[in-house]
Image (cartoon, rainbow, N blue to C red; front, side, top):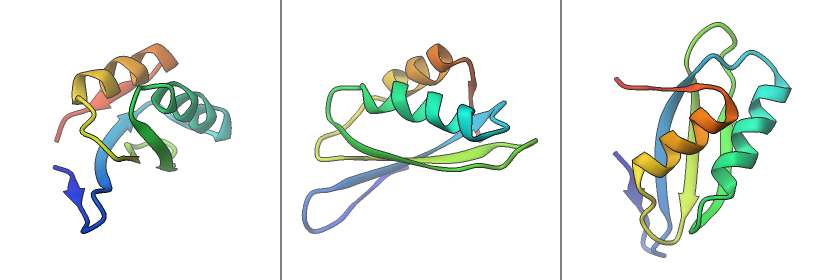
Length: 80
């Protein structure tokens, strides 16, 4: 579930499986950043476990689009 602050910025958090290194972080960041409306992406790498990514946008971004980008980068979106 995402949060919106009083400036209209939306922050959505996702868990991504299979990431192990800085190259993984760069690949996911590049693919997710290319989604229309995404302003920035930050990744908290958890090698060997699910890594948390935060997608910041000024308009809603569909979870399906994020999942498609993560899969395109070669990883999986983990559902809670």
